[in-house]
Image (cartoon, rainbow, N blue to C red; front, side):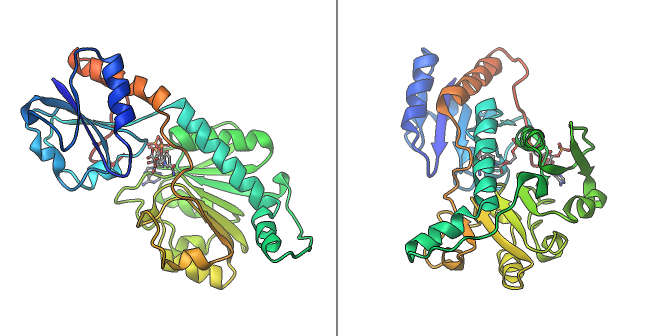
Length: 309
Ligand code: NDP
Ligand code: OXD
């Protein structure tokens, strides 16, 4: 009964240390240094390479170390009895809200433009917007999106949200399903994407949908790079239909040096940092799930592999 940590682009050592400290007598090994593959029943995973998990014949649980599971569902062939779970952590949700609030307020008050002006020592005042002017739409009203929608509306933003199933959130106009999407997007000044990546949501930020936003709208994408059709964004920026975008996630990460997004003054780039898994809080969830697996109890935050989230 051992745990395998299988990470790409993430340091596994602190996770090994915290799990070994809190789960005495459990062997916690870091891939590829796994002594006995048959002993692995629980894998803690971040962006594992294609089909790596098929090497573990007795695997019962695949625990994502993040909120998303597309890095598992897209790359691994799992037996039907293997459960996939993810991190749902209040700290992660709060971190995302703080990030989105920062980006939103910077956009409202033109702060990125002043950074550019400072570089050329230019002194020029630019008109700014107020919270009460802004019609915001949040795509994805899950653990993270629903919290953000409610908090933004408490601040005085006009908030609409969109999800798969019907929702009721205080002071948020909720829309759902394919038919609700156009209504959610129309007359929107600020579009925030916090959807999971599934075969239904891939490419959802396309020219057809972006054209439905109000002229001069701004986009914040913290979902996944594959939600955005990059050429379509370039097109709506060029026509001025969108005034700019803040992108935290990309089809290819790190964003290649030669990518045209780096050159655009009205596109702000952050390196996938909107909300980072907090090892202090999230490790408790991982440990709880390991213990539940051992006791044959229902796991926390199990996803539907069919739905993809
Ligand atoms: P949840 O699974 O809790 O929520 C997903 C939401 O998306 C739900 O409201 C769901 O609808 C909705 N949804 C899914 N598919 C569709 C669809 N086809 N049409 C309409 N709505 C749909 O996820 P979280 O809130 O925990 O996380 C969301 C995503 O945020 C993650 O998957 C990840 O990609 C991203 N993320 C990014 C981070 C970053 O640092 N950039 C950090 C953390 C997360 P319903 O409620 O009806 O099921
Ligand atoms: C996540 C992320 O999915 O950091 O948690 O993107």
